[in-house]
Image 1 (cartoon, helix red, strand yellow):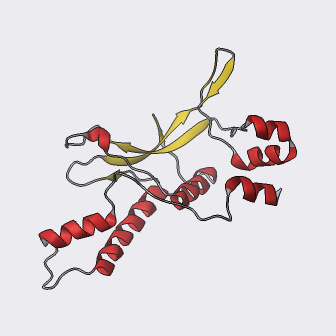
Image 2 (cartoon, rainbow, N blue to C red):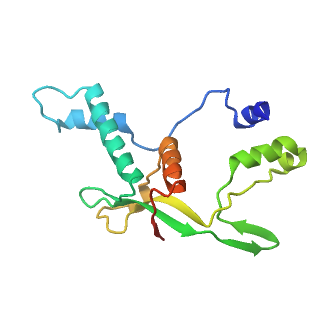
Image 3 (cartoon, helix red, strand yellow):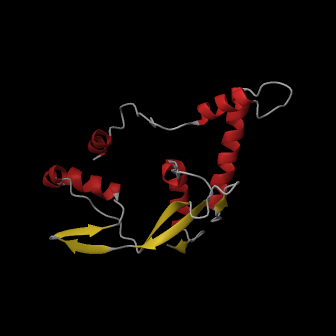
Length: 174
């Protein structure tokens, strides 16, 4: 099972994390240095800038983990934890659902049943409600709102899942 899982998930190979057509932290640092936003008597070093960004991101993650919504400054919107009900429907003889995939059980099925692996049969999580970190742009005051996106990293998703499962946090329904 473990060898099969490693082969399917390609754990032994290098991971490629590349975001195309997006500005990142380094582009923000170059822009801030060029326009001299932080005038502290000397240029802001790259290490200092990354430290500030990391601390702010850690603070925002902790706020989400405590179940608080994050109101972004200058009317840029809100980052919220929300939940919605699961849905199931049969369309054209195919079951459609919004349940997430249970990858542990799916990989176990695939390792035991070659036909299920070839057909890519997926096992879904059995939940009544699905949680989502949601970037709410409704009250935001900027142009081209559809071009902005907020993605939660893998570690924060896992920590949120643990807190939700333990009942430490809850959310409003969408």
